[in-house]
Image (cartoon, rainbow, N blue to C red; front, top):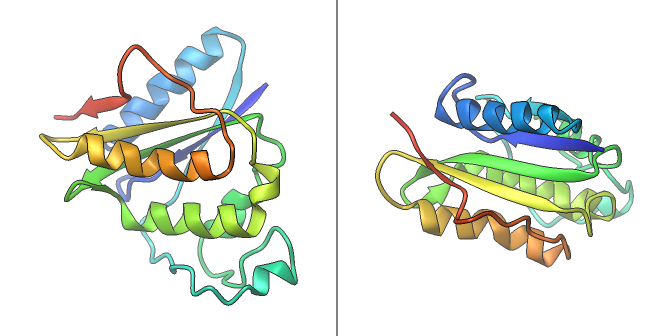
Amino acid sequence: MKVLIINGSPKKNGNTSVALNEIADTLKQEGIESEIVWIGNKPVRGCIACNKCKDNPGRCVFGDDICNEISSKYAEADALIVGSPVYYGQPNGALLSIIQRSFYSNGANIAGKPAAAVAVCRRGGATAAFETLNLPFQMMNMPVVTSQYWNIIYGR
């Protein structure tokens, strides 16, 4: 089994990274392979509803950011975990753009696979961000992996 873990923070080694590395270590202890992909801190385009991805399934027309690289990993993944810092009660906008574009252009390779979200905040807004991260999973018929409580982490 292989789990694709997406670090949706612009800070490579911030609190979101700490949380996702803990998850990766736990998966490893259980004999489950994982790969953490950091979205980076360069600009990410939003979807413009051009539908060009339907002419070239699996690829967004914009090839100048990390979206297609992440999307190409969906076929190999058996499950998906997405982590994001919370900004004004919402996940990082760049991460949301990547999820929207990659699920629309390459959703066939992720649909039905188990998924989990992790929201990382300083004080508040985590429940709204957590819900926002989970909504695309539901749209893709992905079973949401539950926990004893919501996957919310409070950083430094």
